[in-house]
Length: 257
Image (cartoon, rainbow, N blue to C red):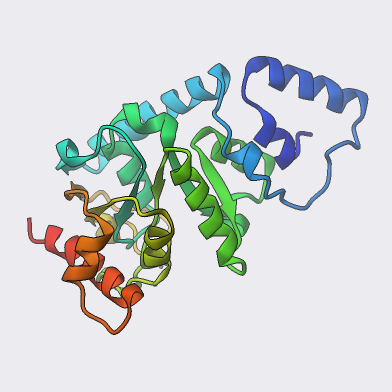
């Protein structure tokens, strides 16, 4: 059986065949149960095999979101064409990542990264392989500094990071308070933030529901905004508070469009 470290190392068909052969010859190798937080492996570019799988998943997800949830997207032209940036949507449902993934252009696929809870999303070999395909790296909520370091590294390498500023799914569908982590990330990297408003996912799949209802979902992308602008627009006693408040105001403004 392939371990999480093995999966993180897969970048091509040759890698997959080589590791599988090694595990058959040495079945105990790499068979530990501890999740490996090896960012070199999880953030490495995927090779042809996993890239093709990612493209297939992208098309499948987009088809489902457009047909079952009548996905509507606006503001795509506002996304930066190059350079690192952070996508900062509100968070009301487990459908939010799927809606956002279906809304963004496929050209962004190779440099877009997500952070996922190590307990919920990395509990089995198939789930870890899925995470590797979609560029989702593990984070432990008990070690927030590690998540910050990983996201900073993605941005330093010119990638795009998705960051949910609320930190958890809204219990009532309303946009909650933004946590200071997003401001810390922006202060560390000085990249622009792209505010995003996602509507309809709470009605389709709230926290207490397992099977989604068929409800229209809308994703609205806002203009990229620089750190200094957020600081000037926000209220608060500290830079962290002003940047966080400024970004939340930008996200909330999109809910009116």
